[in-house]
Length: 365
Image (spheres, rainbow, N blue to C red):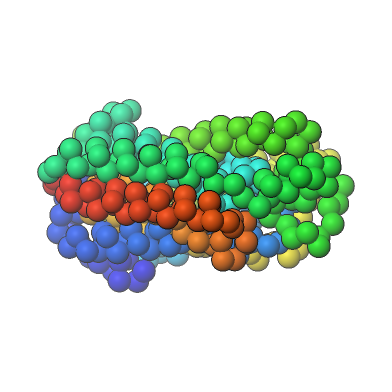
């Protein structure tokens, strides 16, 4: 991470993305982002988080800490308030993602919102939505095929059935929160995000609701970079804007922190000053936020060097696969020959997708 920060901080960056830094740094940034995005919720995975609002606030505190450190490292560049919007979008999507995980499990949820995130982020950068300058590649047909295969792999993963879904189907009246172990009792405050909340209807209905919310979260995640990219693409409006993506980290993370604080204050008011706070989940929440902050910084570096047309598909399809590995070997959410076969097929498709996207190659503007 220090190597990436040093390289990007000392490199002169071109008007679109960094053409002076070697491509391997961009791809290394992709690997870092994938590993940390796919693992950032693992530290909190076995601790009770209640309705999730307190947890996400502590997570956003961890994110802001990373942003502050990076901002000091890059010597506090100009702060653009427009970038705060990206942070607000992410916080809103993050609150939805907590609900989705409790419905469909970590692996399934991340695969869903990563696929939607990929499509929105890739399309906005490639086609130039919302005033962005279109980003092209040397071999667009390979890029299109790679993105299409990535989407197909996401659809394939939808057929996975988690242990929690099977337990809900068999015991609709005896359900534990998905991120809690069966030995932890529910308190009266555990009312918003427990599986019981949605299990009054059929399990299929719960799964559908979870899928819809995951897609909405993915759309919000996909537009997180739009404000900072817009500023970089319009030097006539923002003559002091830097082309180094790390220079926008603090503004984005501040948007995350302050919007999270706003949601949390509203939540406390609605709970009549009796929020659910589980002491065991405070430190894991902060650690999760730190891991996410590192991943997002890697994402920004990848965008600077490779362009969104390349980095977005690669970064967004990878974490779901990492989450699946955690779901199998750590959370024990996924088991069975059928599920394993689906995972093998889906992973194979994603490897092909990644290869095609890399081979499409970014075009410096």
